[in-house]
Image (cartoon, rainbow, N blue to C red; front, side, top):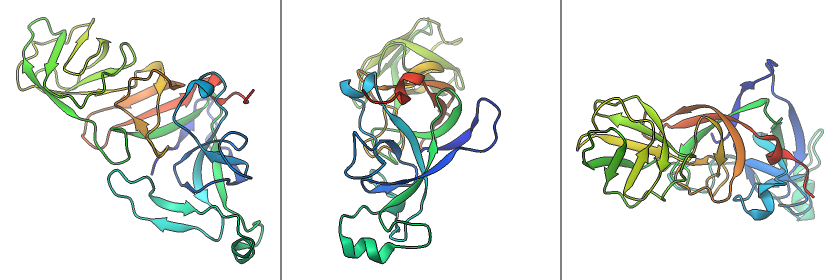
Length: 267
């Protein structure tokens, strides 16, 4: 599953779920926006990669928790696939709509959406490398550093993650289990202002993610079903990260809530 409910910061135990007519194909776990900006004839549509038009007025509605329409299908997930799980299939064909009509349903594509209440709804999301199912690159240290501040590696798959918006985690070595914030981030070397407690030595393994505790940026994967952990965040959705876990490869995740500006009405 992609984006999912993790609780409410205000103490309410139940998510706020609303049913909407979809204006595009949607999967459970997809991030969705207001229909006026990213759809054709529906209340909600698939969110888009953060762009200039969305940075200040990003009408995030929430994320899909269930497919309501009778025309739903199931698509098995594979690494890098754009779709997985239960799918609500969008249609503009009258015969298809008529065939899908059920009790309480319109016959069009319909999904249940958990509303993303700003700074309240806690959302859990897997962290992947650009696309669904691809783990973050592990970077093996090539040159040690006695100051505990410079992480040097030969791994050009790092997209030069953003300074101060990137978490550095030691997965293997004396510093295993420690998190730091990148002060300068690069394709083959990253530095931290607050040093790791122990010497960094060749062979240690580190991993980097484009998210940081507290206020940070969130760029979804290409299918809007996870966090892209390998992004420069030049454009992003503003969020507040409550928890980040980079312990196990392929199972990295974060829990966050949207910053108010990311769920404002479109202007």
